[in-house]
Length: 297
Image (cartoon, rainbow, N blue to C red; front, top):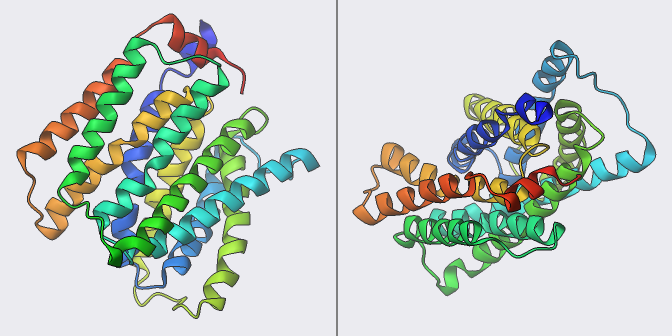
């Protein structure tokens, strides 16, 4: 019980981290660089902040053993590939499509968590998953559009979502041996090293005209968003993490309303309420959820 209490803020960390990550697509569009270059700067500019915070919190960054280094490298590969494909896809399809297909990782990671414990979801869990799916569909329904001109972008965003699932799984496994900040620092370092040559080969604009938005992308999405997510993912079951990540469509709808004067319809509010209800349901104490929370990483 004491160990559980020590991490009672882990769910809140995942929730706040997910909300911070939701502003990423907007900042990518404002970055003034190529899409892959935006991913590089997101990781590279976050490195000194992550290193300093790790030192201040006594989470010294050290080179892991061979087996753990391979796991960190795998996490970096999945994350770098996710950023590259998703950022390109954002420019080739509608923002609603990009958000919806990119969030396939939410359901994939939740499904992986259920497979991990070898059990079907309970009634409460099943209802939470259903409400989350309905809520996400309602929020994205007004902007989602299947058409030939969006096909390439849709496929890239779908692949990005699947790759992000691989990243989440690798991070969840790595958290059993590494503290969150060293894990995030090393995966960001490896990921940045992978994205920079890709950006050069693609002939993208590397240096932004205005550094404001890439700094905000690095701080908001990588330092705060991924920092809180990587911390929380070590203590929160994959099912709950997956559903929490679905808060991002709701935040995206709010960003569209504020930044681009996009209309929020009653159906959008119903979608947000459905997502909120799903999070409340999945947090209700039951033995199935407790077993998932206590399973070894």
